[in-house]
Image (cartoon, rainbow, N blue to C red; front, side, top):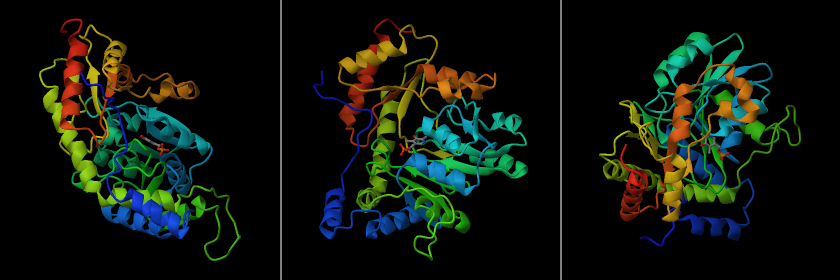
Length: 375
Ligand SMILES: *Cc1c(COP(=O)(O)O)cnc(C)c1O
């Protein structure tokens, strides 16, 4: 038995992070101006293939800025997958708008385009798609519906840097993309976020809003209410070091997913997120959903793994189950999201996992599942 602890997600600080942070300290450029901000933004724009990449303090405010840049306000309705992290819905609420929840697809777990059309009302302004767990959402049908009804499309790509949809990188598919660099994401800056867009006007407004609304040509002249949502040069320095090794970070994720796929074959009634034909996922999380024939419950499985030093997480609660959003269900049923959410387990998935870590997790997961007999 392993004595070690295997976390769900740990940052992989495997490049020039220390050197670049020291450089910030030595140069005293530690606040939100500095060369690393510009470098991080231009590396990111190149990587995603967009004209503008704009740093900000985290992935939640990136969503808030994107909604503000599309003029979202009181009375507006924004379609949001119910199966997502709470930040996606909260950002809509910050604008005084209402998140209207959408059920997910049973195999990719992403927003189901077929469920969108019937939810559109005269108050609907836009759709936020989430590329959940690093798997791109099915964009073309959503973009078609958005065009038909004149809606904007924001991509919450917090979990999906580097993922591709029909060969095109996420964050460049809708009007504006948002990313997170929290410590557990594919690349990290401690806390941090980024917006991506090809829309020059939106980019200029986002830059203004994140810096207290100041007029770029006139110091201390503020003609809109802005925010302080800036990233520090220190965080950007970590981001530059992470971006230098982005292919390594993503390559490790894909290798870990491949090993899980091999290690868990043959277990019946157990599903993983299925890569759709259009998708090149980046596997932020490797997860399993227990089918109904398993006798053993999810919490028992997670407890057994914890006793072996293996950290796991239950899936997100669907947003319509949370107290502040329960009225957003509007009496509708979200059968897929509820089933997945109540039976899903996130397995250790960080880029630092070794091949033997993954085979240990697979072996112990089999043991935990089969402890009370096969389904
Ligand atoms: C992490 C995450 C966010 C929020 O990012 P923070 O940097 O933690 O604010 C938003 N949406 C999704 C889907 C996320 O996973």
